[in-house]
Image (tube, rainbow, N blue to C red):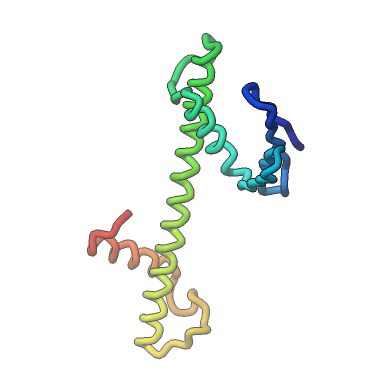
Length: 146
């Protein structure tokens, strides 16, 4: 899938193409040969940035009664909500990964203190959930809860 954007103020175009199943390429058609590859998941954030740069600030309206700039502001609003949700999900996933890393450190320390074979599986000695709960509680105690 591809599309071409033609500027109304210059003779430049931007070819937008699916670079892969997970990325999009933006290719400027001038002598600079500037190519930008972004993740498809980042496309809504790019669209929001373009709308905001053009002065279309996010605003919640009833889409059934909109046209022109109000409709673009509504689209910017919907994109902002979507992008915010994606950022929140990514932060939660990173926090979960960090917490699981802390849990693994606790598990390794516990195993070492009892001379338990580090290659034995988690469920042979304790549930992984136990160490995740311990890591979460340690964060609370030390004021690092996120």
